[in-house]
Amino acid sequence: MEKNNTQKGIVQFAMEAGAYMGLYFVVKFIFAVLSLNYPFCNVVSTIMLLFFMMRKFSNQNEGGSYFSQLWMMGILLFFFASLISGLAQYIYYVYINPEYIKSQLSAAVTLLESLNMTSDPSLLEAVKTGLEQGNIPSPMAVVIQQMWVNVFLGSLLSAVMAWLV
Image 1 (tube, rainbow, N blue to C red):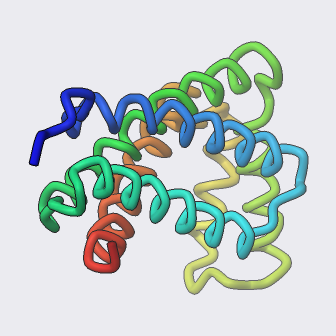
Image 2: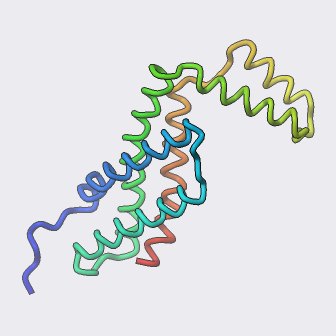
């Protein structure tokens, strides 16, 4: 049986597929900013997208992909997708809506106050004082945190999906 010379390596495949997933993450971010966040649809569509990309990679290798290859491809896929979505988030936080992070933190504090969810009121006061003094995370810190979350959760999801493909 002759091998197909157009087979792509894990990194090249993940970079190309990560571009598509990154665009999906950007659309998902835009929906979240516009308060059109449908968590169930986001989770299901992310799982389906990952499954089909892993299946495509496995089929490219004529079904000869191992668990470790698929898992690594999934991790890299989420990494490259996070780079693209991180760029879009940074542009939004810095140039389009510089007050977004502060307004979201203020909304979270207001929600915690209304729900009485804090066991220590001094903690809530410290957070409020910090917000009033302008102690909010920088846009880059928020973007990097979101990238780490995407890659970590993507790694867990990829491990599960690698068993199914």
